[in-house]
Length: 260
Image (cartoon, rainbow, N blue to C red; front, side, top):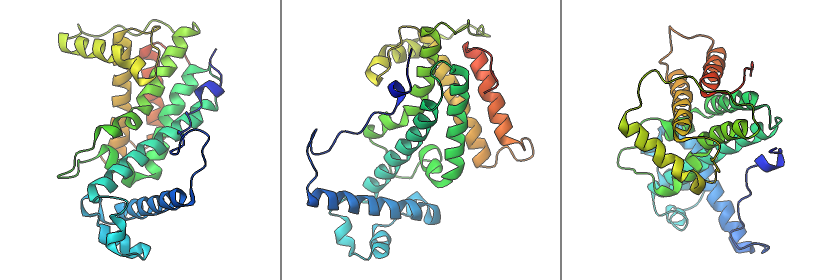
């Protein structure tokens, strides 16, 4: 059985190598990078990502603009740092609340991932908008942002894998229509790549993988509708609504009954 310790988020490797202490210079650089990203995160809520300015960041930090360029080549690198930080902080929040629950209480864990994702998003709306809102004109996120971006969906997949491995998973709901060939191909490809993403998935099949992706899509769709006002006039009790969506998705994917 998976223990809480097994489900702790992995520690980041030391930039200087295992067992090495950071030099004062490296520590100072890391502190300055954190300061720059922190100011940029705050300004994100004031001016939006497209208008982020290295000059304004430098002014708030009390340094010359050229000093910022010692750490970031330009606005796009700061956006990348903000995106990576946002995904990482969200992933850490989800991992922490999941690890606090018994490993075999898979339905409660599933619902907790949904709740935590919503709570983090409401607490950090401008970061959420950067991660899941309108793309920033002229900016393309590099591939390095993909691993932290997948942490929530991989957490959902891991819960399904745990349910199957410990023998509490039921048969998922029947699909309402035949699976199109393109969707089947996507499911097969993603399922093959799960081990590369750190998840052993021999207990679930490719269509299960696509069911998890569908649940992930539903989760962030509901949060986006709430944050961006698209549920105005239709949904008032947002927390209850998301809880119901999570439990419905859990039932459809074959998790045991529960109230979350």
